[in-house]
Length: 234
Length: 132
Image (cartoon, rainbow over the protein chains, first blue to last red):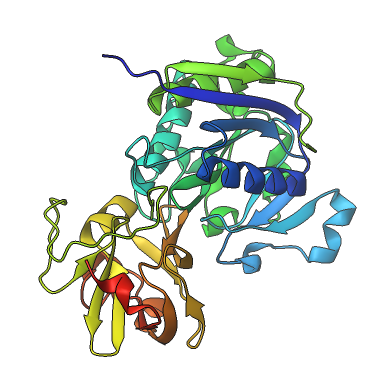
């Protein structure tokens, strides 16, 4: 007997970080009460630095007052992980799913997020790997990070998720932080790492879809429903 | 720690549900927290099974002494593998002591879930919650 496991995918385009936080809080609450099924948000953010629950502001290398001049915002969140950056040409996925329904613990869930990004890189001929130690969660090419993870789990329902760098637009912004609190390591993106035969990369929307497809399969979903043109203010 | 949709209202004195180690004298909530009742104060932590599913704990957030906790509601959180997981209280009451060792050594939750890795001590407000 094959169980139908459905995932609602919301393709949101560019979303302001605080709007994204409000939306996740709303959806998380509705998921906990069973009003909505497992849902995955696919989006991008305008230039935004974020810190997690540990409030590691010390890893921001420029004064907060300078952020506006470079067109960036700073937000704190309740997710795990250190400081990171979100911006153009970076895929952001926020699964709002019930871990107990899929019998995953935190560790296995995070490993699955990593695996999806490693697979996606592999599809473009890029050999990525996961970090070796507790501080290195995420996806790396050599000692440069291409994919980051920061998750919150509340009563078994996830929010926040992963960010995967596609274009180089974000890379300069990463110079203003010690990314994920790990000094001495760099950051990279797919367009810098693929061999010339994979260039030009397909449009970002296609790469988003590819990552969504891999992640949803690894999480065990066999029925995906996509929604676009959603009014998130509702 | 994931919980079922219902409040964790049933306890088993000796859980045979988990393959990871299990300890006498504790009661288990269905959501992977344990409660050790002891005279007027109950000690609360998470199970060996739960810590195994979390991965190595790097940060623990605990409530302040004197604050109240409610059965089924979050009282704190742990961070592991870049994930913060809320920890829900199996009982209601007042927090009378917190394990300050967890600030310096959060890994105690992994290495000693039932002893040195205890999280909070609570004066129960509703003793019936502790009955199986």
